[in-house]
Length: 378
Image (cartoon, rainbow, N blue to C red; front, side, top):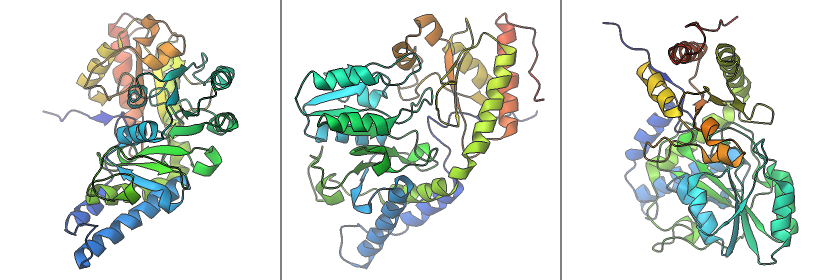
C-alpha cells in the first residue's frame, strides 16, 4: 500500500521546526544551569540566552536591551496592552484574538474594504479624546497576509501623544524589519512562526518605556517578566532568528509559489475571491474562497487528501468559524465562511502546490463546479 502524500501549507499557524533549531534546543537541554546562578553552569546558560537575544534583536533591528523573552505571541501582546499603563486602548478590527481579547473594553479602529486601517477614522478617534492612549495595529494579518502602513500610522499615533504596539508575529522572518523605521514603541514576536520552537516569544520594548510586569517574582528580563527563563526555547528562538534573517532573500521564491497556486486555483474556479491581492501582503499567504463550499468542508476534504491548510486563524482550539477579519472588511457571512488560508514557508516546494491544486480541484468538481480537472502548471 502506497504511503499517503502529506503536504503542509499552514505555516501561518506554525512553521515546522528547522533541523538546525532542533539541534540547538537539544544542545541547550544539556547545559543544565539556571541563568540566574553565578556558578559556571549558570554563566553558561546566561551566555546562551544573551547570544539568542542578540539574534532576535538583529532580526528586527532592535537594541539588544529592548528584547524581553516571554512564553509566546499571546503573552507578548498581553504584556504590551496591559503593561503599558495606558488606560485607553485602541485596536484595529482585524487584530489577532490575543489582542482583541486582551482589553475587553478597547475601542475598535475600522478598516477599509481592502483590509487597511482607516487613517481618517483613527485620527478622529485620537482627536476626540485627550486621554493618553495605546494603539495596537498588526504589521501583517495572519489570515490574509495584508500589510499595514505601520510607519505612517505610527506618525499619526505619536502626533496625538499615544503609544503604538505592533503585532509583528506573522511578519517576522517574512519581511525585512526595523523597529525604529516602523515607529513601534512595542513589538510582539513569536518563535514558532519562523521555524523555532513553540512556547517562546518576545516583546520588543523601545528604550526606557515603562512596562509593568504581568507576574511578580524574580528580577528576570530586567524586571519585566518574572520566572526562570525557558533556556532551550530561547536558544531555539535565537537560532531560528539567525536562519530567518539569512533567508529573507528567499521571499521572492516563496511568493512565486504562492502566485502559481493562486493563478491555478482561480483557473479552476474563476469566481473564487482572493483577499489582499491588490494591496501589499506577505509573500507566503493566500486567502481564497471556494464559492458555495464551507471553509470547514474544504479544510476537512483537503486534509483527507493529505493537504493541510486552515480556515482563518488556527488558534481557537480547532474551531472553524467565519473570519472576523473578512467580516471587518465588509464581506458577507456567506463569503467569509467559504475562505481558507493557504500559507507556505521555508520547506515548501512546487510539488506542494501541485498537490494542493489537485486536491482543491477535485473538491471543486465534486461540489458541482467545473469538470474534474486540474489547471496546468504551464
